Image 1 (cartoon, one colour):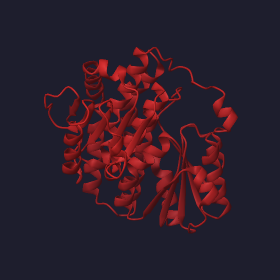
Image 2: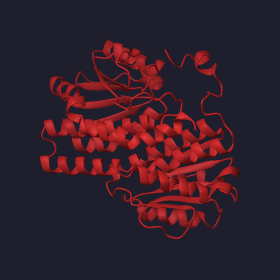
Image 3: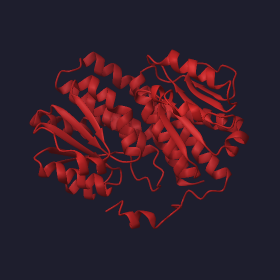
Length: 355
């Protein structure tokens, strides 16, 4: 058993700890928002950090009522020039060593912007170059393939919205309490969710072992889930996976569909439900390998992963990623891929990805 599975199993307890200790963890951020009078947020991060930002952006905007932009750090460093003195630039790196995320905060501070680092390590490079540092309370994750760090990053951003929103009276205490109770309820579902994901993998194991391409389709917060699912499949199983926002998939990528295409749909509770259901049914006529992650009772299709997911769309990425985490881990184990090792150990050094 590799460490990746251990970290998958830890997620429920890790997330519950963050929620229960939120007042202590997030006081620093609440105070920074008061001091700066933040009128916009720019968040930079790579890989799983970027995907977590994408999964939580909409909730940040909804609760705080301010613009939230997302940038890849390298593009931010090379091209972005305009942000106000009341902008807060947030750099996220679980290890705190991502070179371009560090450089992004250096650039932002040099232009007079306010900065916040989110990292799991208080002595990380990222912490050294930021005005303030919020510790990502996921604990050590000594694996290249982040799981509990990913969900902890989503939760951290959701709680920034809630704690700042409550402090600045942008959300009522009753609504705040409702959201917190739902987040706590979600943390209690992980053991059952993981067991269900293992059963789903087992039912479809022979097909999963044969796949050499995947497309994952999501929308809204779960577009972030689609991005994360694809990157995890690539990292752990060494084949290309594509991820698309629902509408964008309809404008060209659908032309690549064939009878050996593997398609995964993230069918949640949002406004898009009917449109994605329609696409899901259509693609089943073109390929047998159509899988759906959906809320509700089992519909009798072994390729359908049905679970009583949260009905709060903004929180659903915390759960919808779990079937993919199990798929990635189990398939890699069954194919004897060594997840304790990086496939190309000299690559990060060659490209100076980390400080």
